[in-house]
Each structure stands twice: as structure tokens, then as C-alpha cells.
Length: 460
Image (tube, rainbow, N blue to C red; front, side, top):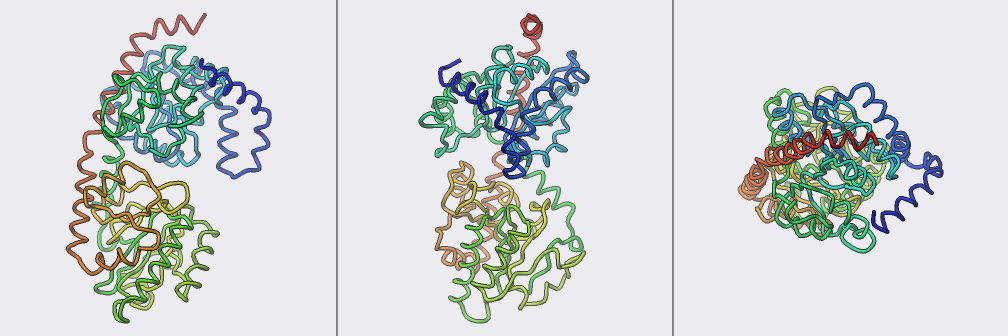
């Protein structure tokens, strides 16, 4: 254990008695704190009753919903090769619970607290044949406990953002031993290899596999397209010639840029085309506070409030919300669970988080829908850069939305070219799930081969 890991472990021990005080924090944060305090005992209880040592066990950890969703195609491939697989899934954010049905784990919950005692208890009880991290989140306590128990460690869909605090200062010093313990890492691209090495990953452990979330997005969009017909629309039809710009997972800063940009564009055109663009906003957290925030902004900037999706009734009218006049009103989606389907009824997508918030959200899903993708300049996602280079996306200056919209709205051929390029970029990612599965299966086989030795070690 490195000196910094020792200090880190001691700090977690000191803070543990104080954790109940965090119950007054946000519901998500307090749920994670409560879950991690009891995680080791929950894993131990499950293992005592349900762990079958004759079957291989994969422990998959992902920080939140996005990381685990991207790992789902890899798990599907692993299960096809090893139908006897047991799967233990842990996550750091309660948002991941939405993805669990796609993974069908034998047990799921929070990981143990980052204390050696808790991590050792969980690893020894579960006796995994491999512990694999999805994208990132390889923390010292869990990686050290697994390495001590000779459990092979890996990572799939691995990426490190250039701006990550892990790459510099104390953050890097803390994470280097954890990444150095990884025996096989499936990186999303060549560019990620250097950053993974800076974090301590051995060059020989890195394999370029691509990102399996590309295949997940393609499959999800294609299923939605097959299930959707003219009578199954989620959004109203627009007046002839109108165009829909849909902004997914927006934060307040996105909403300000979009609504002010819409007002600026309308002020720059003649009266007749002003109704030719409808803005649809899908807030990252579509609660009452988000609706009130957007309503106030619309009334102040546009002079009228938005339309709420929940007020459209059970089935949106096929003739439009209320004709050309109502299509000028932004439409707010005040519900969750069908963002992919909405992209199929959209002409242009905006992805939230690139102006402010907690970082740019995934650009892959709208690209898989085959439409142009726009986002703000505050981002360093590798797939966003790749999508720009492919010609399927544009990075929009904070005050430049109206300038970008003009050519896109005026040129259907430009929109079609960008949409085709966006879809082709996502299609180029096919094969990542199989590559990631091969990496995981090799780790499981390695773990199964060392199982007798690990069992002897754990009983000492």
C-alpha cells in the first residue's frame, strides 16, 4: 500500500462515524452514503446464500447509469459464451438502478466503503473470478483488496478525460497504484492509451477495443424505430416545413443559451419563417423546479411560456399542438424514460452539459438516430471530438447558436449530410462489445485457474 493510500484509508476510517450527518444532504448523495455503509455485509449475506463456487462470478462496477449501460453489451456477449455466469454489480450513484434490468445481475448494490476492512470482507465473501470496472472508477480500497486475493482486475470502455483531476497532483498520486493493478484494460481509442499510462496502467495491459456504448445506442434506436409508427408518435406533428430542435439532458446554462439563441434567431428572420423552428427541452432532472425555471426564462426572453408535454393529453394530436402559433412555444418534456424515442421525431439535437452543469452528456444516442448533433464548448469527451471530425456534429459558441442555426435550417441537404455522417460514426464503433467480452472472458478464465490458490489464501 502506498503512503497516500495509507493516508486515504485512515481518512475514510476517521470520517466513517460522521457519515450519518450526510443524510440531510441531497437524496441521491445520502442514499449512496447509506448504501455504502452496509454494502460489505449485504454482499456477504448474498454470497452466503446464493454464491455458487462451481459457477464463474464476474463483479462489474460502474459509477452510474451511463457507465453500466455501456457495459451491458459486453455482459451480453460474456453470457453467451458463459451461460453459467453469475453477475455481481455495484455502482456509486442511485441513477444506475435504472440500468439494472438490462444487466439482470444476481446481486446488485453499492460497493463497500473505501476501507480495507470492508473491501476485504466483500471480496473474500463474494470470491469473484474477475473484478471489472466500466469506463473508470477504479478506487484504491477495492482494487487493493482484489489484488491481495489474487482476483484479476480489468476495465472496459476505458477513458480518461483530459481535464480529469485524476491526471494531476494528489489525485494522480492516489490513483496510480489502482490503475497499476489492472491486468487488462479495453481502451476506447488510441488517444486514451497515453492518459491511461499516465495513471499507472501498464502499456502491455492496454488493448484498443472501442466503446460498447456505441452498439447499445444503435440497438436501442433501431428497436425504437421498429416499434414506432405514424400512430405511435410521442410528439405532435409540426406545421409543413417546420423543424424541431430537441435538447436532451439540459442544465440551466443550456436552457439559457437555447432560449436566448432562439429569440436571437427569430429576431434575425422575416415574420413568415419564425414559426419554422420548435424548441423541445428535456431537462436533466425534469422536476417542478426545472419546469418553473424554464417557464420564467421563456416568459422573460420570448414573451410567452412553454407548453408542457404532460398537458398534451394521452395522445398528442397529429395535426400539431395548436398550429403554427403554438409551435413557436418551446415544448418541455416533464417526464423521463424515452429520450431515445424522442430523437427519432427530431430534426436537430442539442446535447446538454456542454455549457455548464456536470459535463457533456452522451452524444452517441442522437448521433445513432441519424440527425445533426450540437453542443456547447465546455467539454472534452473523446466521442464528441470524433463526431465533430466525422462531420456529424458542431460545437456551438455560447453566444453563437443563432449563427449556427441559420445554415442548418435553410439547407435540408446539409442536415441530411450531417445526419448520415453522425450515424456512420456510431456504426464505426461496432465490434467493441465482442472485443470487450474477449478481454473479460480471459480475466475470468485466469481467475478460475487460480481459484484453488485464492480459496486457500482466503481461509488462512
